[in-house]
Length: 257
Image (cartoon, rainbow, N blue to C red; front, top):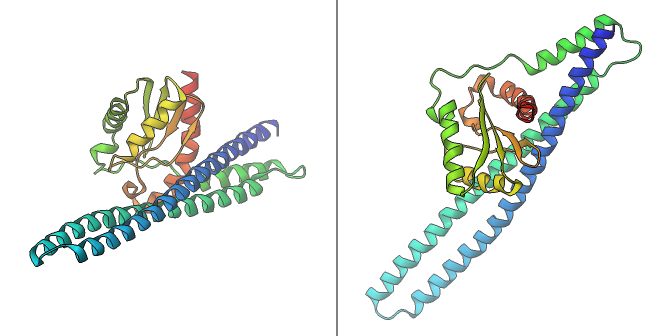
């Protein structure tokens, strides 16, 4: 009985850690959503202003040829800004989708926690059933797909972090890649807290990667850069559940080394 109580305690602690991580991730996504929404409004206003200015300049331009040249130049400028607007709208939609997905997974974890929480009247066999339920919920480890793009291998992730640090003008005290299952996780220790913000800005400029939050202290960070689009479709949900818990475990290991 005592051993079973220890096991269920460890399971509960693991689920709580995942819920805390999810809440942190949701907060990050909500901030990203708010920033994207604000930028979206600004770009819309700027696009409208460009179009209005284009019409005004076109109306006062002298000569048919000169007016046509002005129109073409103004159209190109407006199209460029409108493309930026469309790109920002897509990012906004992605942030909203990730927020909804994270909130749904958090709700599922909370429900699982309630089902797993022991009752004084529960016997030893029920403890075992609860433990098995959590194991079933997390699922088996996911192995890297055979056609894994180089960007998401250990070397690819190391190179990406090193490039980001170099472009950000910072020095990292430690860089590690956790490769026990897919996706591989990144762990770093910075010189100071502000360094990681600079690093995140660099990640956002990399087309192959997607930063979605981390488990962190002031200078230590465990995170995933592999985007959802690289997940095998039949393993996506299982990867999301396991990755949250793995990030917490990897973060704990970073601090102990």
